[in-house]
Image (tube, rainbow, N blue to C red; front, side):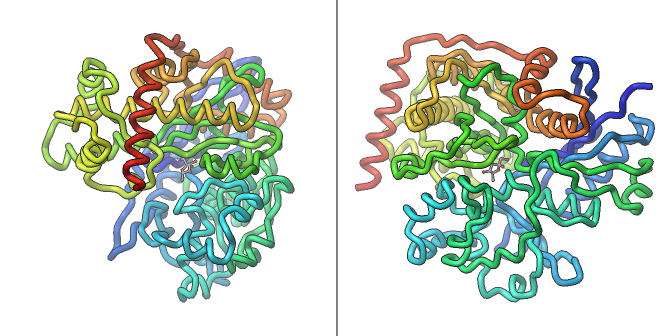
Length: 496
Ligand code: LRH
């Protein structure tokens, strides 16, 4: 009989999905069992994740997966976006809905934490890019709340889902590295940082590594999903970006990657972190990857800018179909105006077209005149930010690259991929779009002995089996230099 498939639960900021991965004799295929929207809910001032709706989506997905697979799965792995968490009380009950990283509660918190622990020292200890929503800052914002006082356990989102599925609590390392409480050299907690910031590390269950066993589906879960037990749950790179980078179909090590979805995470894979002051100033992060790797990358706004524009146009009853808008964007004048896709001012939701127009005006650039031009501005800006991240990653890490791999949902956007190739002056290999789910599946498959070798062998399997698109760089790179200079000037003027 055919080998049992692996189920990858992959929760993104815009949607969640349960994918079925089949691995056998040099073949690797992925099919979608179930996809569901991820719709955050504002209650009072606070933006929450609708975590039970997501969990229901996971269960529905496992049921659908089971139907396709005759009720039998080889194993299940869970990954999601980073940094966010749920708190459990002493009985294991969830205390409140997890707060969304785009919630405003962390405003100004980084500055307060900096008084206790200077940013230089925090970076030297954790190597993490300062983003307002890092778990450290969320915990500092929640300090002295009754909820945190009542909490006995903190579970990052994928660990929370895995806990509900298995009853076993753990903290998976790649996602733990996004808390800003992990030292990337020891790949273990940093008591120095925790003490300085006032975080109780006792809230975190024991660390586990991708590939480690993480329990079995509980009888109630088997019942509710129609699956036949035992179904093991395997820790994967539970940070979606860690799984996405494991899902990059690269050969050798001379590659940069850009995982583009709601965010663009652009950088290189290293054996050791880069903790220099220069790296901190360049806004680079050292997140931990599978197999002892370091994901040296910059977090920049990704398709969020576009998603939020579409949401705004939809609410206003204006055309918001992506296909026609991308055609208009492709026909629009290139690089007419660009915005800084690294600007934290774009993190919060709402009124995106207006905010983009304002940023253009402030930078002394023409304001987009219509939706097509706005989309072009977003894609040009992303390509420019991709190029800066790739160049800076190469410069700061010393890792030479000859190819840029674009994975994640943005790999489907041919215009974005071509602009990225043009801006970087490097060939872009686009795909797979479901790199996170594939990385998730491959980590499980390796743990089960269904795929031999390490990351390199898994990547070779991806390259041999997944449809990929190639974009050669075209055009005059100098136009990108000039756009970058324009943006730098605008930023400098803004800072005065
Ligand atoms: C992408 C991602 C990214 C994080 C952000 C919060 O989904 O995990 O790596 O920085 O969400």
